[in-house]
Length: 122
Length: 108
Image (cartoon, rainbow over all chains, first blue to last red; front, side):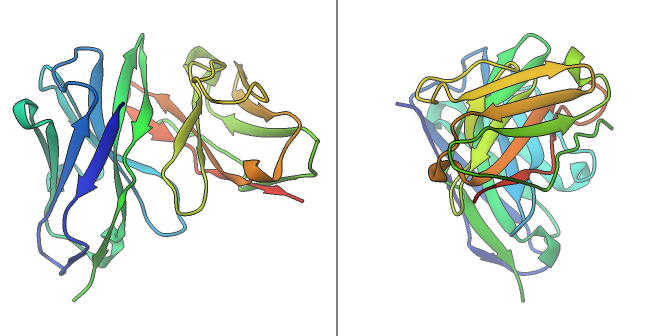
């Protein structure tokens, strides 16, 4: 049974750094055909992809947020961590992690975590 | 960067067929994936590789993709299908993942 679960603070202050952890089970972060992405959704708005990481440690970031994001993984702990620096109220959103299935010139998300709402406010 | 365009809303009566479009430049050359998101819940994959259904997704859900438009079709719509639907592709030019803006399906 595949599960992903996000954890982290529910409230952060402007300018602070957000650290979110995605703990996965039912699959290994060393699986070459899989990876993990972080995706966020501001209240009432659309999904926004943030970053991904694969088993070979290949990483990619949203071009608009690249300077503020860092993604990493600890395969032994089955965890993927996302940090986002210099948080702003516009970063208030539900943050999801999702499992990636890699295909030919594509990938998609077959399992998602429940999401964690992060509010940025002083 | 690649842009996917969805209608903000689609309305359909119960038992009828709903069609949700996702427009993009030559989207027919890409694989399109669709997600259903009900209020307060995480998205759920309903169609991948244009027209494949994950296990557990009813046959009423189908997809097609050609030219500049991909379409998610929901036959015999039920009240429980009311949700937001998002299309997604992989793109090599900038951000690897692109989502459409989402379509709210209302069952009348």
